[in-house]
Image 1 (tube, rainbow, N blue to C red):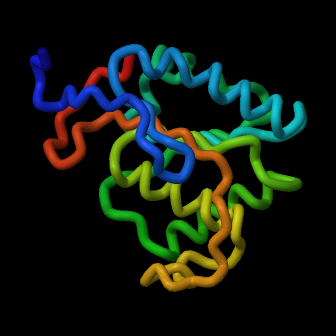
Image 2 (image 1 turned 90 degrees about the vertical axis):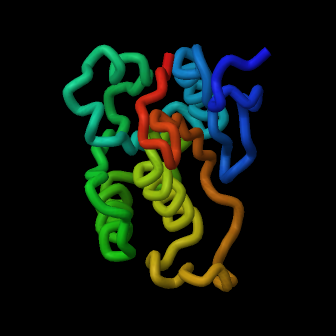
Image 3 (image 1 turned 90 degrees about the horizontal axis):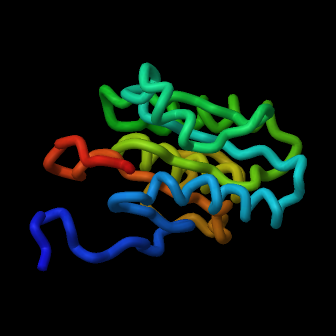
Length: 163
C-alpha cells in the first residue's frame, strides 16, 4: 500500500526518452548512459543539463557517471526558460559537439526538464526554439535519447529523494 501521494507506482514514463523516478533511480542512470554510449560510439559525448541547486553537491554529482569530455552545464532555474535562453544553451552545446550526443541527461526540476527537452529537440531537428512554438513545426523527428531525473515534486516544489 502506498504511503505517499507521490508514490504512484510508475517508474518510467515515455516522454522523449523517458523519466526515471523513485528511490534508487539515480543509481541506474550511469548504466543507461553507458548503454547509449555503446550504441552511439565511444567518442560520442553525453550532455548533462543540471539544476543549479546541485552545483554545491559533489556527492550527488559524482553519482551521475559523467566522463572526461562530456558536456556538463548548470541551468539557472529562477525563471521559466525562454526561447532566447534555449537557443543560447543549444548553440553553446553545438559548438562543443561534432555530431549528435550519445544522450542528454536532464537532472533537476521542471525548468531543467523543459530546458533539456527543448535542447534535445533542437540538437536533433535544427532551427531555433521559436520555430517550434505552437507545436505545428514540420521539422520534428524523433529526438536524441533523453533520460530525465526529476528532483522536485512538480507543483509542490518540495525536495524528493533522488537515491
